Image (cartoon, rainbow, N blue to C red; front, side, top):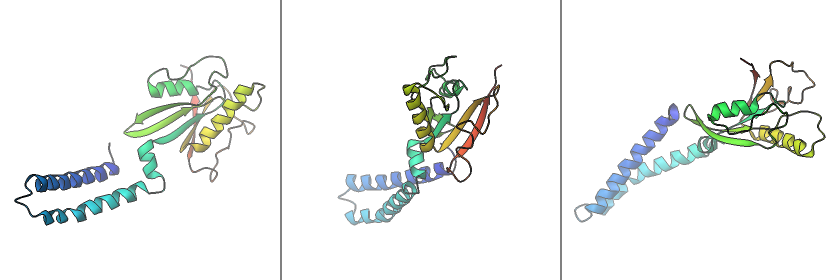
Length: 189
């Protein structure tokens, strides 16, 4: 863990360890120590508890620290979404195929990226027309994953131009969703 959160956690850890050591000393040497000495650690313990509560009730930032940043990978079929997930996971978490519509459900992988917990969701390819009922449900779930995500990463095929008619184009514009909507392009090497 790094950054400013580490400083908080390390400070709390040291304060809690100090309180515990003092309490253990009172328990171990209770006959030689006045039990009212325990009152000395109460202000520190109360302060640490209050700081932790404030930290965890901070408008979802605490939730993100506990459960991870939610990142949804969206885009058209066969743009490389599952390949990207597999690269991030460093394992074959999702099936990759040249056939469009291979991913039908949301596949989630919990990752540690640079010390930050990230829940990455690979989603079904989004297209406007399909007669397949199961694929339509996959597309609905893809949009739901994008709506729930903290970050939406749109992956598109570099060999195909994106247009205003694409279902993901401009879906998460400024002011529509408090997340970063990034666009990555797939390049064959």
